[in-house]
Length: 237
Image (cartoon, rainbow, N blue to C red):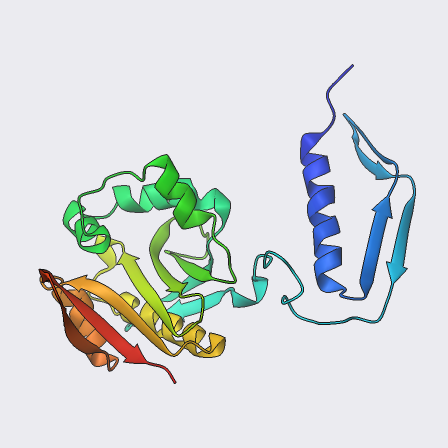
């Protein structure tokens, strides 16, 4: 007997999740049976129980779903438009390609150590995120959304008093203000989240990132015990 259409099953489950996410009035949703074979998936019977919604938005979820509303575009200094979206679990290969097309020195400045390919555990950590505690935006080189131009990340403390930023922009795109625009996006997101302050640990030799921070109003602070690093801080509230 031919195997069931796994792609069809996956699509059906994702659609089911979208229905539950978009309709907070759904208290129960039961599909029985869900028939799957090599030709696709059919719901033979379904039951839905509706109740007044106790809460709206994403606060009712144990894990915040992918935030489609945060997809958008940013511009560099010359007005070039770059598509932007939150990172997805399947983006590990995309990030590896970004590292391959970025100068090793720029990668070292971002990760504070030499790195040419993400170890599997680190790749999972950076791409499989909890959107309610962390956000990472992938910027694409053009509308095809095939090649990453950069990544900006904001990791929140549990109390949302502070969040740490990190930014990597592909080396051939330096000098056009893309990192500046990406930092602005992180700042705007942090303000919407009610974060009190964002900060980053930046190598003193990373003049480009320090200049971006200076231009956006960050203050510089020495880190005790590590003369190679500075902590840059920006109050948001």
